Length: 190
Image 1 (cartoon, helix red, strand yellow):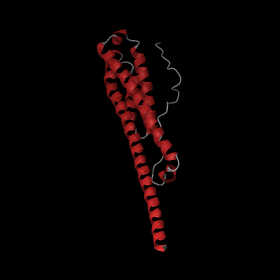
Image 2 (image 1 turned 90 degrees about the vertical axis):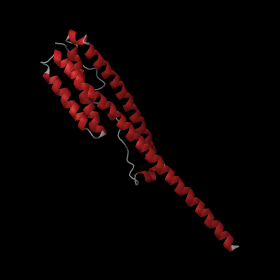
Image 3 (image 1 turned 120 degrees about the vertical axis):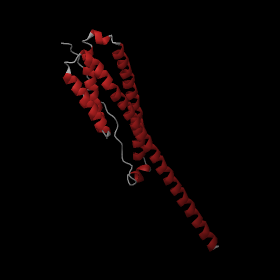
Image 4 (image 1 turned 180 degrees about the vertical axis):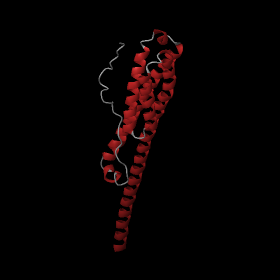
């Protein structure tokens, strides 16, 4: 009888251990999946930012042909584009993106001062491409932030929080609006 009771006890302990191990493995795999999803979504943001960055030289060259004396704006666009290309973290990417957005806003404002440029087919096409890309960037940022939220909630939820940090799953940073984004841009044609 003692042997049978001992074997039953061992079987119960073994089943509990198997359940705990299976749960931990499943939880770990879920965290890996969520982390990879956030990495993929960040890559999608970078792809759209690169698309915009690739369009910028064509837009600058078109505007430059009409407004060659606006070198300060062209330099600002080039510098912001280079900064975006060199960004590696979410914070750096966000800051460089805001800088490029501001410089592009000034570039578009300059274009408004040149009626012949505004009617140029190449310029209009580039402007449409840029507008479409801006929409794609917005969607990619939103998708990234949703993936980060899901990941961050998971690593902070019980029981995952117990082992997530130990296994190196740290919170991810979301894209945030740049400082001053709530204010309408000032366009001055003087």
